[in-house]
Image (cartoon, rainbow, N blue to C red):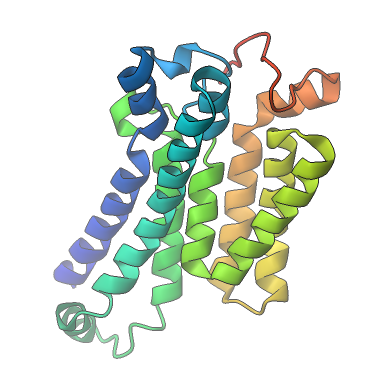
Length: 226
């Protein structure tokens, strides 16, 4: 029992640490020697990198942040294929790890998302978890990831507002997982992850209501209070 608990606990910690990699902060320090948390919206995500550092650094940050989410899911799936894991599972009376795998990858995804927004390396600050959440979706079930990306693209094409597109994409995840007949754990991830992204965008929501949320290419007048 102890070995099984330790293994899964270690995997969740690894997922959190993977999500905690401070991509935007590191790029800001490397390129301009600035703390990106003190610029623009104060977020370390790709949107604030775009406003602060430019297009190509933002694309790099976006890709790495997506890969953090994919990597967290891939790690769990790989470890669960090992004979060592099967032996530990058998020792606690679990003959088929496929039963618990959807719940473990879901938990790992949530830990990666939490790590991105509450990075241990940045004093538990970070980004708004949209890119890492998208990576988790691709890791869980790639058609749901594509569907979410498509919804984001449609809203963005109409509004040119990243935050609005991100919020609408996030709230669509649970419905997509349900419509695509995915495990309950994945639907619950959509609900929990969507709520988390909404909470992280509360300052953006206020600006949307006030009509002051900037479109892509526009400057944010005041830094957000996270």
